Length: 209
Image: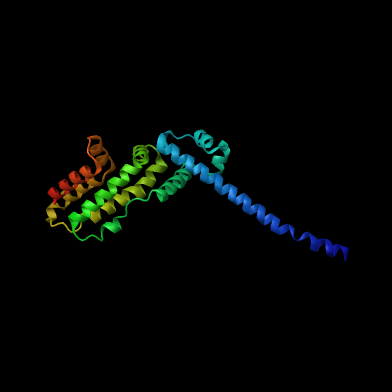
């Protein structure tokens, strides 16, 4: 009887183990979040090519090995930080632009929205696009996600213009310039405001159409 009572009394330890596991899981998630945010901040300030694991660890307040425990490879670190940043800074959706029937009105609305987003994310986008050719995991991610989105933008904005088949290539080339981040930056560096830059880009597209 005493043996049975002992085993019954020992059973309540299970909930404590589950509680400890939950606490540990929350701590691990918090550590991962701090590391991810540290990567994002370094990507924004110095760029992915100049981001060092030791600096990530210092900024996150963890040890170097802890960073590797959460992100064993550079690719996993870039994937996590880029995905997290994109959730916080959602890019304009070409699907919403497509709902505007008039191509000129659609273009103006799209460029206004896109150029505002570029202004809000210039620090990060400038460094990501600058470093993508020399940071292989980032280059693959940009190729799959960003340049694919750019093609969707061009497809959406090219629809509906009264242009002959022979002029489609020129129209799409002009649209590619209009939605390009570095084209936008050049116009801003020339002293144009966002609305002025958007109107100039739109006028070039109209002429191409």
